[in-house]
Every structure is written in C-alpha cells, then in structure tokens.
Length: 209
Image (cartoon, rainbow, N blue to C red; front, side, top):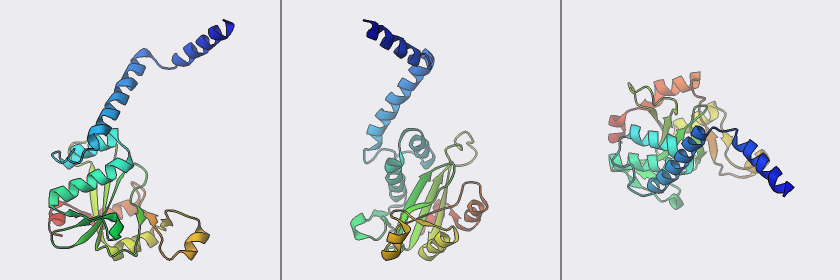
C-alpha cells in the first residue's frame, strides 16, 4: 500500500514537468509523425509535390535513412533519370544521356556533404543536396541548395576539407585499398560560400546532364 502511494506520487511529480497542453501537442506530433512515416515509405509519395514541399515534410517528419532515398527519387522522377542498383557499385542514378550521378542529401544546420563516398567507383558526377531546417520561414527562396561536381572535383574537395573514413580505424583503413569517405563544409563557413560560388546549380543544369 505504502509502495503504491509512493510510486503514484513519484509518477505524478514526473508528469508535472509537462503541462497538459504541452503533452497534448506532443502526442499529436507523435501521431502525425508516425502516420507520415507510413505514407512517406510508399514509392510514389511526394512525387507530385514541389521539391520545397517535399523538403519541408522530410525535415519535419522523417529521418535520414528515409529522406535521402526519397529526395534522390524526386530528382530522378523530375528529370527521367534511371535508378542504379547499389550492387553495381556505379552510383545511384543514370541520366538519359548515360551520365552516372551519385546523390547525397543532407538536412543539417551544422555540416553537410557526403557520407560513404567511394572514389573507386566509376561515377561521373556527385550531386550534393543541402536543406537548411531553419530556412522554411523565408519563402522568398527555396529551402534547398543543389551542388554538382565531377568525380575529380569531389575527390579534391575531400582532400581539401580533410575528409575522414566513414567507417573503421585509421590503422585498418591504411590496410584497406577501398575506403568510404565523409566530407563537406560547415554551414555558413567560407567553404560553404565557396561551394555556392563554384558548384551550385539549378534545375536547368540538371536537365541537360
């Protein structure tokens, strides 16, 4: 009896950290998130949205394992690119002109760029999509930037930005000849501005690949 009273008092005290209004808002948010995750996983979800709309849904409701492939699929659908099987080790997209593109999407406010970039693969271009999660209130411009660079430019950027192996220790990676690299600029840095000046592209450029 005393145990139950003590437990109830502790539970009540813990619940008092959130107001009823805040708890209701969080419950509604959880319900919406999980409902969106179910819909988001469907193949054609978002393909009829603008990229800005899909970016907003992606930033609000899902994680990187879901939004990366979805945003890449949006680009492929928009420009009639074909999906490449990951088992081929040749990028994830091919344009109607036979150009192979590897897409890397990030929704980050600190650092963005590539994870698991493999420069041993025969890829023509890397497409880096960056969505700033704080940009949606400013409707005067898209909430995303798209950067396009050749294979050699991406490899040079990895060196310039002191990219690191995505997996494994330094000693193990010294033995391995094939390594997956992570690299990219910090948001708002001089390197970020340099990417905007040198590599930022619009849909017109992508349509001609």
